[in-house]
Amino acid sequence: MKNDEVVRLFDLYAGDLFRFALSYMGSKQDAEDVVQEVFLKLLNKTVFLKADYEKAYLMKMTANGCKNLLKSPAHKTGVDLEAAAEELACFYELGEDDKEVYDALMKMDETLRIPLYLHYYEDYSYKDAAKFLKLSESAVAMRIKRGKEQLRERLEKSI
Amino acid sequence: MKEIKSLFSKFELDEAKSDEIRAKLVSKRSAGRVWLIPVIAVAVAIAIIMVIPVTRTRVVNAAEKILKSFHINTADGLEMGLETEPDTGKEYSYISYIRYDKTKSVEIARVKDGRLYLVLGEEWTDITDKCSATEYYRYELVHEDGAKEVILVGGVPEKYKYGWVIEIYDNEGNFMAVRNNIPYSSPRYYPNCEAEDFEWVKKAYEDEGMVFPGF
Image (cartoon, rainbow over all chains, first blue to last red; front, side, top):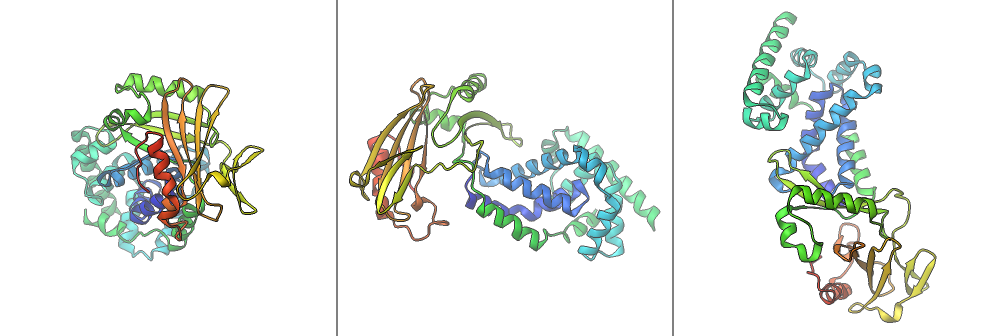
């Protein structure tokens, strides 16, 4: 893909992809690395994206990038998620309430966290989230329900 | 769950990091011209892309065949494959240039001492008198594996006023793809180019029986 096309996509979607990567990784630096990798990869990709499909494609690339990074040995042994959360809270000047929500989300298994994020932040319908995650709608609905319960439970405990 | 929306709305990509990535995207050279073409479109454009079978199995077979055998002058190889749109499951075929050594120059037209040269490895051919804003030089290059490139260089020997187009054929003579390096088509990098300096490009496409895609 040509540089100017990749830059256009970057300008349009980098913020959304960063937030999505953050919901996976929990670390600002890791999320930034994944976003960078996604766009650098695009330079070598043979892809012409229809406008209404651009974001979904990039979200998919981001999800794959996050999964790969999470699986890497360096990540498993070298990331202090608590320190990363603290850095994030400090950088974005999060209040106590936001910090609690963030901590609660990050302590949750990603199989629940990502459907929650897609549904409540990205406004994906159950059907769209199911397509994205390659799950059935009922499985997505169940995960979102369990995710909500866990989040509420953790937030109540932290009060 | 408005807490999730509220929390994540606060996260923006760090401006310094954003600038850093953006700079890399602008400066890093892309590995090659790339396309992702719906299979139906490929079928319609068969005359210019080669005989790409429409069914998945046959397309994959074609890709494997080309992946193993295809070499071109301006890259280390050419690859065909299929990519599936995760959202809809729709399949797309693609053609991709492979460059293992990205530091290796792929420029095949160069200007030196006011002359325009076709450059193939160590061999420089002065083609100044055969080229102009409306005329081009045609050269056929056949590789050891039978793949063929038809190289068309045109323009005048001034900075950003010349370029090249290459038609690529596989070792069975099937038209595979066309690749070009025309400064006028990349105004972001070459903002001062004029269309009139590249009249030869349209002529070259037409002479070769290809559809001129425009700049």
